[in-house]
Image 1 (cartoon, rainbow over the protein chains, first blue to last red):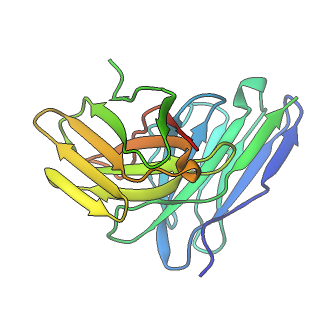
Image 2: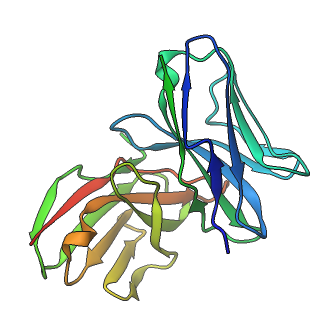
Length: 113
Length: 111
């Protein structure tokens, strides 16, 4: 039973480029969460999605960041026009319907040059 | 006041000892509480969760919850060097499924 999958594991972008981070939840899980961890800091909630719906995006920066979880395929976290401050580890977690426990993927480490 | 407070540590204990990790939270609406372990450069790994006041045991781990005091703790018995990691406390806010993470306590178990 594969766990939460994220790719790429490492991503390097230059300032102004776009970053696309992908997350495939565990089999049978319909809820996806994105968290960001800045260097030497704790995890911060960004967004909670179910298939084709954004449930809670209270942690998303107002500009440049967007997320989706289409009916088919992985969840995508998209960062437009990246800046150096976006450099962080981005973790995706998933949970099954009706359960609270969140299982984390290995993360994508984004480095903005 | 931070939403979730943890002593950053490092908490240093000898191998075989009990490690006690503490966490306080500010949102009285929090209903469930999760403990994750995170090794350096890795992703959080679920240890256990607790919903009700009192103790909950799972192997060498015991979670303790006191909602009146807004306090949750994790005890690790017979600590091993492999337990050396950062331990994250994460209450779930009742109105949402999102977790609010503390900054974590770094545990160091000395051989």
